Amino acid sequence: MTVALVGGISLYGGRGSVYRVILGALTLRFLIAGLDARGAQYFIESLATGALLLGVIVVEFAFEREHVWKKARGLLLVGNRG
Image (cartoon, rainbow, N blue to C red):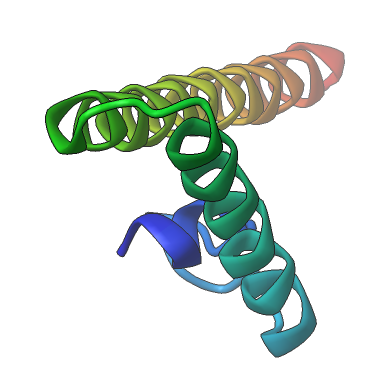
């Protein structure tokens, strides 16, 4: 799930591609490999993966919320013209 979300697949559906999922997998793999190269323990790698996932979910929520707000605002403006 982390790979898909980092790759840009939306929690709300309808967006994403295979190439972006591959990019998400590479991003996560580079993160883990970098931590492993520094000698980090496994729980640190898990913590970093979880933090990345949480960050992606927060950004996804913020963008979706802004999109819904703009759409609702547009509907209100169209309704006031008539």
